[in-house]
Image 1 (spheres, helix red, strand yellow):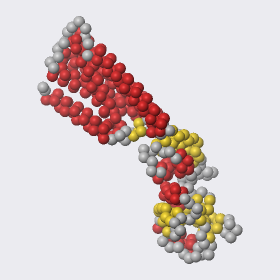
Image 2 (cartoon, rainbow, N blue to C red):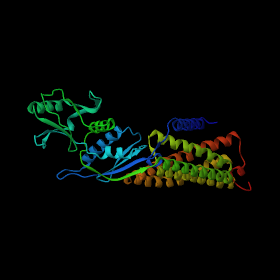
Image 3 (cartoon, one colour):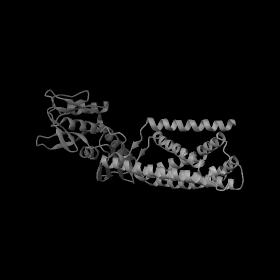
Image 4 (cartoon, rainbow, N blue to C red):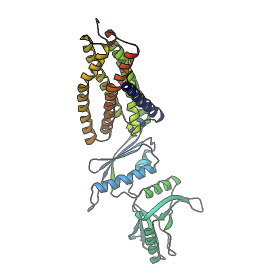
Length: 406
């Protein structure tokens, strides 16, 4: 056996074993439509004179990301849609109201002097001066929100309290007074508490909002959708059933029409599955229903490539060539056809990924991964296996390749 062929076998073995390890040790991330959860679509509504550009949208997405992280949601997604919309997906969330409240609230914290008649003065300081906020409890065990300011914020806070001793300092959240204690002396150090009739959960959520920061631009919720976990489970079960039936029929078809190459193609199909899921895991991609459709479509393309190769091999065998020479010629002649068809598909997936959003992008990503994996398995793994079986078992009968009358 030539040294070059041995290197190919080792390379294929390393790739397949690595793919199997990645597939088994790391579960695939499931999207909202498979895991269940909450979908929220927001639209930025700039106030008069406020500019809504890419920078403002970037800050909006950054704040939303921090809020989503504050919910403790894993595998969440916050994406810009069009020029002024943001799509938020929260897989696994069951408390829809809490999630929507956390995402859509502006959470603008302001410090203002409360006049004797109850009216509020101008804003003296905002939540932008906060360094951190956390839940604490007063002497009676009631939840409150402790905050600490940045150095600049602390200096400004000290100045405000120094200049307004004897007055009430109102702390508002989105225009609603949370607390309005009377200032007895200058407060240095930039630390304080916000008291109110908070439950522990409300105090925790408010602290998370303050830590995430206020939305830089007002965002209006356009659409919310709750996807049940049961629906996701049913989708996965139906997809698994469809996949098993499809692969089973393909395996039988390949064995009946192509005999030994059919068996090799089935083994290559297993390798294709391992490589595809390992690549998804490696890039931390999220699998959705459209993504499953992309994988199933690429399974068909993987089999298609094998069919093209095996038909070329059969043609060579009918011309009277030896089995090994036919295998070499078959792969060589099929290569350009397989490359051309897959490149055109990759061009389409690139356009879909560039111009599409959400599920369309997911479909494009999985189809791209599937196409690349199918090319590798068809051109490399199938060839290595087919040559290996032929040499190992000294196969020289064209009938084992589905050629009749030879």
